[in-house]
Structures are given as structure tokens and as C-alpha cells.
Length: 612
Ligand SMILES: Nc1ncnc2c1ncn2[C@@H]1O[C@H](COP(=O)(O)OP(=O)(O)OP(=O)(O)O)[C@@H](O)[C@H]1O
Image (cartoon, rainbow, N blue to C red):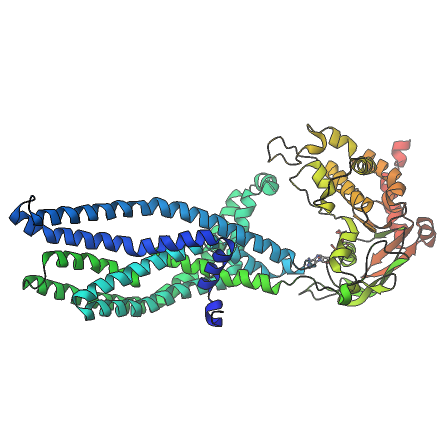
């Protein structure tokens, strides 16, 4: 039977359902714990009350008689129950750790799936998505969402304990038990509203909170450690963290002050409730209408009734953790996987047979006020290399992201052999493009895994591996590693080693070449020699023709020694291709390319003075 929609959507239900599906065994353990939490403390109190109640009779007739036996039996039961209650603490600790670890694993896996689902990358630049991500990862508060399940179960146990206490009190005066129960329900509402209002104000401050987290990450990230030190950024980080954190907290403090009236009302109600209970019990005791044991039991039950609705730190923690649940859900539903073209799409294998054509392509970044690319036409001929040059910010990397279907043109089309790119399954096309991005990823994995990452799951072919390493100039750096191909390329792991920027660049090139060997049809190199030394760059220049031979390649570089080797060169300027041709043709044309080339060549030519 399906539960009603309101329940299905409630964060409490969603959390328990996740645990039920992810680990039914742990949920069963947690429910047993909840019942124990709800019943055992009250049973201890009742047993103690009954023990005290048996003392006067036993004192009168001595421990050897029937009354003495009754006292000893009750004492034994109370002792056993008390011993049992002592086990709750360690059991709770173990269970909490296990449930939290399981929930964390489930939620993290869902998050990774969610953010990787879209084929494009624009969502990772969207502040609304980043806010949701920060919330789902528990970065907007001091509480980890993975703790919600066990906190909720513990809280349900507390509620049960409170209800049992009210029921026991109702056995003495029905209206007293019921009255305290209703009072706590009435008090709980505004208190919970208070907590929720506080969380809501936090939500409005996601941006300063995200920023404050940014300063924390910056301080801990090895990548930023150098700049933090040489520019003396430590105090700046602390100051900024404090400022943004205080900015985020301010509205929450104001909200609490605003709700002070409600807190005062609740306090009056609580005092009235317990005042009535104390007077009723006191009067009964004074008039001897209440046996000693019952009096003790009822007195000890009074504080236990608070658990029906008293606000504790666990409530605040729980509400905060639960506020992340809708974010996690929204990320999983809103970030949809790339659509599959009708009929499953066309096969990418072997493409392009003829060409890849940018036809009237324009592109504007979300929120920007001008197009980066404007009505651009460009052709990449199959099996040939094309170099694109242009000044910083001309849009060269943007062009690559359109070619790799990481972004979609705002106007115009990209056609592969005359077929619009959307007609190919986007994931297949993306894997068909082997790229060395300007900011390529340095995986803290072995050298082999860094090169073969394009083929996760498949065993690496050693011959292909050796061949691509040779062509990428990566043999030397890999041979210099303690375990060769099996060395982890990060000093942050045991036995791992860090590579230099240029050595990494060769690994990244080997990675792209390996993907080409395994069937990728387009090779993209964005600044492939930016970090290479002069000799390595010269060797790359020599190998360029072998690297790109027969492969449809797009090369972006500010180094004309690399660019001039391409079959064709295009100049990107003002969002359009303004010149195109071979190196010699463009030099003869005497346009922008010729000017840029001569400027760079002049820098490297020996000066007249030096020649003298
Ligand atoms: N993610 C982004 N969001 C918004 N604008 C962006 C983004 N990435 C780049 N831009 C803008 O788009 C323009 C083109 O950037 P792009 O990185 O494509 O230039 P480029 O030609 O590769 O530059 P460079 O030679 O410096 O690498 C720049 O003005 C840049 O500010």
C-alpha cells in the first residue's frame, strides 16, 4: 500500500525509507533500539517506585517474611532493568556509527550520481545548484545530513518514553496525564516553528555561508597552500571567514529575538502544567490517599513527560539535518540525465568520415551580456589537424566545450558529417572526443590509471600504453618513478610521487592518445605545450605530425611553433573566424596571424646587438 503523498514527501519519511531500502537490517536494529529507548527508562522508574512502595511493609514484618520477599523480588527486577538500561548507551553508540556510515555512503553516492547525470557542465556553475549541493553536503550548518536517521529514531524513542510517562500519570488522574500530553503538544508547535524559522533564515544566507566554507577549503587545500603563505593570506582567510559567517548568522539571531514572545508564552504554559501536577500529587500525599510507591512513581514520571515535546539540542540538530533532504531530492530529480535521441541515436564509431562543421554557431554564458562566439562558421576536416589561434578570452576553450558537447550553442548547429550533434547519444559523442584540457585533471591514482582512465574497467594494453607514452614524451617521467606505471601520482599517498607541471602535461597527452588508440575519433589539444620546457616543446613539434596523423584534431595554442605544423590554421577574433588557411598562406596574406607570428618570432630571434 502506497502512503499518502504528504507523508511520502515528508523529510522524516524520506530518511527512514532511504535507510529501509539501503539497509533493512540496520533499520530493524534501530526500531528495536527506539522501543527500548521508549520503554526501558520508564520501566526502571516504575520498578523503583514499586520497590520503594514495598519498603514500609518489609520494614514492619522483617526481610524474612512475605513482605520482605516482595521487596527483594521488586529490588531484583529494578536492578535488572537498571542494568539493562546501562546497555543502551554503548548500543546506541555502535548503532549510530553504523547507521550514520551507511546513510553517508548512500547519500554521497546519490549526490555523485546526481551531479554527474547531466551531460553538460553548466549546472556546476549555477548558484542555485551550488546552494543545494552545499546544503545536501551539510556545509550550511554544523550538522551532517547522514546523522538524520539515527537522530530521528532516537527522538521517536524519546517521544514514546514521554507518551508512556503520560499514560502512567493518567493511571493516577486521567486528566493529569492527558493534560500534560496536550500541553506539550501545544508547546511543541511554536518551539518547532522557532527552530524551523531559524533554519529558514539560514537558507536565505546560503551565499555568505558558501563563501565562508570557501575560505575554510582554501586554508586546507594543498593546492592553495603556497599562495596562502607567500602572500600572507592566513589572517585574511580568518577575517573573511569570520565576516561571512557572521553575516550568515545575523538574521538567525534576529529571528530568535523576534520569536521571544512565543517562548515566553510556552514557559507560562509549562509552569502552569507542572504547577497543577505538583499541587495534585502534593495534596494526595498530604491526605495519604496515595501509597508511597505510587507517589514515588508518579513523581519520577513527571520529568519523563517532557519528552513528549520538550525542545532539546537533538531537535535542533534533527530539523537542520532534515532541511537538507529536499535539496538532495531536488538535485536527483532536477539534474536529469542527458536525453537519448529518438531511436537510440546514431552510432559515433568511425566519425567523422568527412567533417565536423560549426554552422552559424553563437554562444553566450548564462548571465553574460554578450556572446563569446557569434555566428561562427568553421570546418574540421576528417583526418586532418586544425589549429585555432586567438588572443586571451577570444573563446577558444569555449569552442572546445561546444565540440565536446559539454555546452550547447545558443544559436546555430554543430554537424558531424552533416548530422546535427544532438542526433548522437551525447555520452557516446563525449567519449569519442579525446581531449587534453588546459586545466586537465590530475588523478591521485597510478600512472597507468591516469593514462587509461578513458577506459575504466578494461585491462590496459601494455603495448598500446608503451606506444602512447613514447609519442607523448611520457616514457622518461614514468621510468623515473619508483614503481613505474604502478606509482601513485600524488605525494599525499604512501609511496606516491608528485610530477612537475610539464611531466603531468605529457601524462595528459598520453591519456588522450590512449583514448584515440581505443577508438576516439576526435583529438582536442588545448595548450598542449604550455608547461613544456624548450627541448620538450621542440620534441613535441617534431612528433606533432605522428601524433595527429590521420586523426581529426583541433589544437589550440599560443605557441606558433606548435600551431604552424597544423594542416590548417584559423584565427578566432570577435567571436568569428576571421582568417583561415595554411601557415604559409596566412603569412602571405599578411593579416592578424602574420602579425602575431612575427611578433612571437621576433622575441625569439637573436637581437642585432647580440649578433654583433
Ligand atoms: N564558465 C564561464 N562562465 C562565464 N564566462 C566564461 C566562462 N568561461 C569563460 N568565460 C568567458 O568567455 C570568454 C572566452 O573564454 P575562453 O576561456 O573560451 O577564452 P580562450 O580563448 O580560451 O582564452 P585563453 O587564451 O586565455 O585560454 C572570456 O571572456 C571569459 O571571461
